Image (spheres, rainbow, N blue to C red):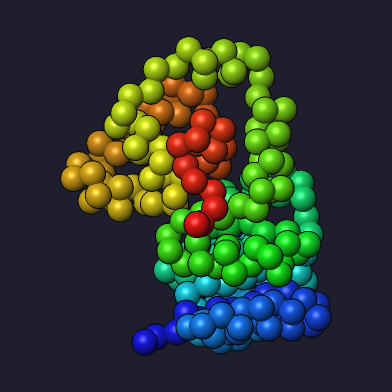
Length: 221
């Protein structure tokens, strides 16, 4: 049976070693490579083609956000999981917008990293409880009264709820169209209508909305 390949990206050797020990202790998983800076990370991701890339934010040459974006562009099948000390709502938003499928704090490495990898590998998103709280608080604080009123009054239909859920799981328009047996243009129309109704402006905001309203699950079981 093929093992799950994982790339670890962090400029601190101790963190890489700790993550490697946690990951290699899981049956069927294998750390296929490590990188200490952003440029090295992108090159190794393209060459090694891991299933999961675990990326720190504050790394040299390219930060983790740009690394996430470049990996997703060069190898869309690689799922990126952020492992960082940064607890800011802004950074969580940027990571999700760049294409990260999960966000784990280094303080939760031992307890949450295996759960996060398992969830992300299974096609789900993963935010630790503390990060989920940060995301929700940031979402509420950044929303204007007008937007809140707009959300409260908006009527979102069952098909739009389904599309919100699929978008929050990281599905592309093409994947959603195939699953729901509709055209890509129809998905795009629904997506546009959803954002207009709810006053949202990006996929990250759709994710925040889905978390707040219990549409999407953030943690794997």
